[in-house]
Image 1 (tube, rainbow, N blue to C red):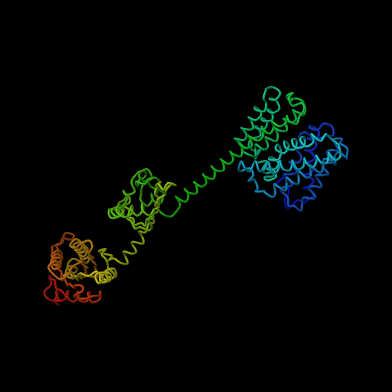
Image 2 (image 1 turned 90 degrees about the vertical axis):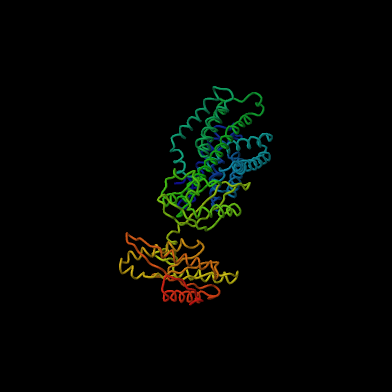
Length: 587
């Protein structure tokens, strides 16, 4: 629960609480630091008023300022000051509180004042320096007008006393107004901080009476608290230590050197600034570093989480292809452990076909454009299985455009490829089916119509295949079809297409051939290849093939005409006596 207002508290109760605390701080300052009816050498109360008032909306200010004015008058009266003298102090103090609260509220960014060095100086300038200067100027004018004090000392005493009090108390008061009672309890729940605060106060009380140059030693615990606890602990420690030092000075236990006696005790309080400000700046720096480290850790955790949980295979590699990092999905798909992959070349896991394209095209495109998108590749996992992936790679570069690493994302499309194979390939032989062959034949017609030349469509029908099925069963028949498919692929070039239309019918697209000896030699090679004896599951099998040829463009300039003429030529060969080859022209 906050020490300060919330929507459930009445304005009057809140004003009573703040004015009571303000009155207490005023009593401490007057009792310890004021000689006679003059200005208190150190004034803590206004920092409390500024911190509290800065958190309120402007409509609530009049009541709080009125209660603060009453508290100030009461404190002076309790300490024996005449009413007329108390009234002289009132305008300057209220102006200081109002201006400080207004400036902090106008530039208020929650606790952001404590997140950078420049903002700390800005906080002190807005909350302490400007209000103190204005309050001191107003009070100086009032005292001069009434002839109550030596005018040459009023302004200096007021400014120094309020400034030291503000620097001592305002950071702690402002932090508490933001975090409330719960925040203070949580801060003090750390056993380290209360012990450190006690040590800091003990050093501040004892060292000035025992050692020379005491402020150096007093600052040491403050620096340690700044290093360990940051701004919150340092602000509270500064407040307690400053109060302790000021009490020692006023009790005569810490005496000023003779060189400043002509100025009284005012200048002797200046070292307090040097004691308080550096630890506060160190605390801000430490909090900044901690915040940056936490942000970096969170960013790294988010990156690792994203890297590991992204539903894609991912790895990064050096410019030479050495794998640097790899995510779990990649490892699970490939069946490897991290130590088996890190520092190996990414190309070690590519199929031979993908490796060749990778070396000739992929790397060149990556280095020229800085990225490659949606490139189909095949990986070989630890079990020797093929994994089809869609690869996207981006080269990460520094400000000098030097490559740092390559980030690679691979999407497993094996299921999609298998689905495509089922749609466009024969399930038994894995050859292109009728649909895929028709598409390639159409593209061939369009291509050779543009560039000239020709190609051959070869229709192949197996002779005596029915007898094989009848005598040996369909299992041997299937093995025969698979073996015929393998022999046909080995008899032609890799650029040619071998397709199974169904049953015992095959069709081939042989590019770059025109009627003549070369085409006849290839057809004869196909015939002999099929006619060679087979041995399937210990069964000797002998078949032959009837082949029909249709040439583009002589026997047709579109896929339908070519297929019909090749089919007619094949039937002509079968009716002629089988185990032979006929052309569409011959038929």
